Image (cartoon, rainbow over all chains, first blue to last red; front, side, top):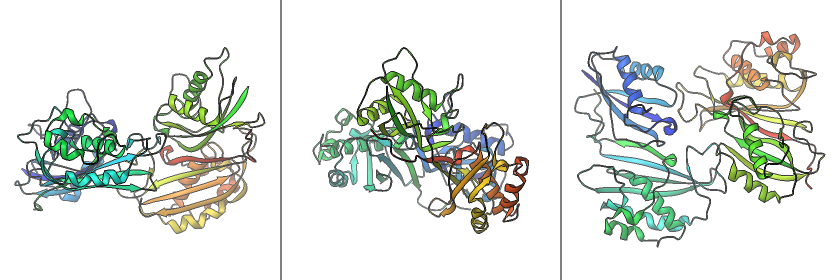
Length: 255
Length: 255
């Protein structure tokens, strides 16, 4: 078998998330069908492995997936074959044949997420599926003061929704930024860390919005990390603003 | 009765165009329902009048509509009332009470359209509904050489699809530009003219793409304008790239 790593972008609007579910349109199922079509309907269904799930409505700029097929294709042939089959809301950005050491999910070293928060009184029709919207005043400086509290290794239990199943809730955040994009009238958050719990980015953003609107003290994140209790955070920002931007691996497994 | 002029933006993706049609989701019908709700379900249905139709999938950044309601509201109250009722793919950008002289359709002095053509080998999932896509080489200079041939008053019969019903096919184009947006890897066309025939912008763009890809001589537009025969143009660019950007009126009819 020959293993391929593919990097994909998708518009999450019309997907019930990444993971396969009966009778739902999911990224995993649509990718799997495309791969099996390229593999000429093998006797045993070829499975695809993503770096992790994304929820319904969440987008990807650089999700990573691997799969094994019974014959070898050039990277470029794989790229073109997949893009010619896939619907227009998924695009393969890169395809690479890799050694069997590579595993999209178990081999990750880190992930980077972006979150787009559109400001302004009304929802821009062209952004409704691609941002969250906030119409009230927001103190960006308070948010920027709070962000360093997330950096480092912490137990993020307060920032984890029920439904995840991980051995530990300890993760490390390497970078957390919030920048105002004047042209777009948006605040763009970025989070780079070792890994993220279920809904973690959306809970962090919602807490940061509460800090920015004066509903929480500036350093409430320190308290939340200490109490390790999801009920203290309470809030989750909408899926539409979230983008899985990049998945990191310790090395290039290219063949 | 009190007349209001509203300027609206809409994402055309999920609309069967502007004009009402049985059993279809259209901008006109959804606006009309909102206006009648604000007017508290008057005995006689209040109609809305757009500056013109847009086809299924065509977007608007500044469509103009008027209607009459039986009581007066402040401009700001009208703006908020409409936006609180309308779905998120239509946004009222501005509402203004105007004199009864104002007519959104018959009073227009000109219109400006934008057309976004995304380049690159594959379709970007986030642009699939908001641009047309062209993956072959395109000579922007050839297109820019051709554009001035459109300027001025001409019979645009060669650039008019069947289905329109206008007294004359003579229109005047004041401006026609094509600019390469490097950050987006797109060619952005803009056309400003006295008025546009049915599908006229999409046919012009398709002809310009053929000129840019060497399928037509650079000055073929001069010939097309002379022959006044739609069969000579043959091609229509997709709806997804087209935006009604602005509608012009001779003066401000504000009360």
